[in-house]
Length: 154
Image 1 (tube, rainbow, N blue to C red):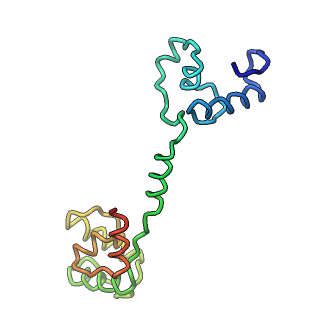
Image 2 (image 1 turned 90 degrees about the vertical axis):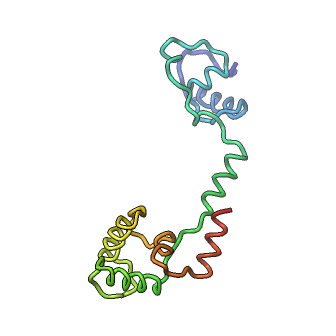
Image 3 (image 1 turned 60 degrees about the vertical axis):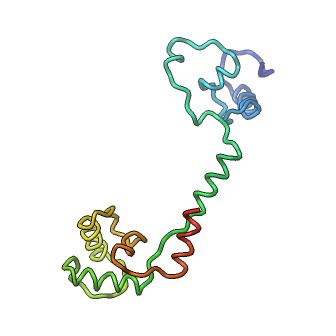
C-alpha cells in the first residue's frame, strides 16, 4: 500500500511513506502508525489497540479549524492605563484593601490588593486590572478598550 520494501520495521523510508499517506487521507502527517492511520489503511487492530481511543489530534486540521484558531489568536490583550491603575489604587485604599501610594504601577502590592477586592466582590481573583474589575470599580474604560472589547465579542 505504501510502495516501500516490506521489512516489518518502521524505518525512515516507511515513516516517510506514512507521512505522505496521512494527509492524503485526512490525517495529520506524523509518520507513525497510530490507530487512526491503521483504521484508514483497513488494517485489523489487535484487541489492545481497539481499547485505545482515537486521538482527535490524529486528524488533519480543516480550514474551518484554522480560521477559528486564527480568530482566537487575534484577541486583543487588555491593558489598563496608568490613570486607571492610579484610580484603582485610590479606590482600594479608600476601601482598606491597599495601603500603598497611587503610583499607577501594577506592582505586587497592587496585585495582592486587587485579588482581595476581586474575591470580596465575587470576581475571578486574577490580580489584574481587567475590564470586569474596572467596570465593577466604576472606572471608565478608554475608547480604545471599548473598541477592542467590541471586536473581541464579535
